[in-house]
Length: 460
Image (cartoon, rainbow, N blue to C red; front, side, top):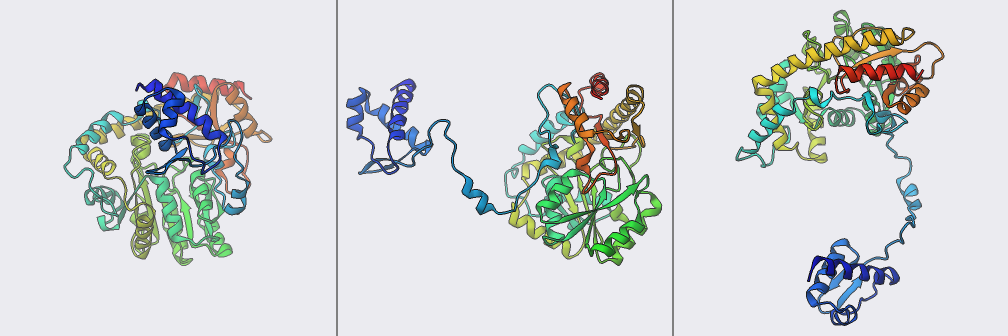
């Protein structure tokens, strides 16, 4: 009757099953008791274990039967038929992780989209989650659009009404939802060049065709944007006006109105990704682009995930008019609503004085790391160019000398225990030169950040 007896009998029965065909009947319980000299309880437990594994099917009054014929150890399944069934609807995630895949264990991270754990709001978030979990309605169904109080928190900075807000499971989920709501499969979508690779992946997964519009030190150029709308007939422009990823660019004040006017003239939406709202380096971030919009042109996307913690998957889409109804409909079809405990925890976190303190402290830390990374880079790699020192965000955008191979450099750096992002995946089409995106927030501390850049120099 011990667990070891049950496991031993189950092992013997698995051998019988491998030699049998699907539908074959196993020996009766009495036969198993006599053959293996075990008790009836051991037989019952072993059969229950195999049934839970899906190896057998029990039929009361009839017996126990082999459910399927498992493949032999080491023998691969023949899944070639799936290639035909799935046709050409593949989802390319290489722009998210790069062609080199996930970072190796123990490597110094000079890439990635989240600050190091030491910079995250985990202590405050743990307390907020504990308080949220004690609410009597913590596990009740949440409204499809999100908790009213949480929608109010997101509505304020955007100058919107809580009724204009749809809570999302983080920024990436919001991107996917907005792309599918606004543009039909096969449609073009205008994107800044370079841009966030996750947006390119989400757009392509939605069946859209990203069309690049170059940016300069002041953000996207309205004249080129107008030309792109005219050439493509696109009805959507995805942009990051504040602390752009990867360049750190901020859309110049004199370009804000022209960008909106160009989009409105084209009968198109502007999807404003405001992911870095809480990642300012101690300065005041520009107001969201949606605050300048009086015609429902802007769909605003924001999130607290990057400033809080990776698993606080809470963001918001803010829009006015039928486009909001369309996104709400997609929410109901996709997943009904965002987890209520996470929404309650986010509300607790964002409503507490500790949140503002955390954001201010994070800004100071990011500014210090950014300055240090730029200084070390200038000393170690003087031929590399950092176009600007960003006032927000998590990265430096580094141009390499002409003729450099950024992908080869990234591969060599990995061999030296450093992970850095090659610039190619930030472009929808051909890159405008060799670049690296160098993150200064993912390393454990400034000492590790400095060591990572030194190793990077050795990889050249």
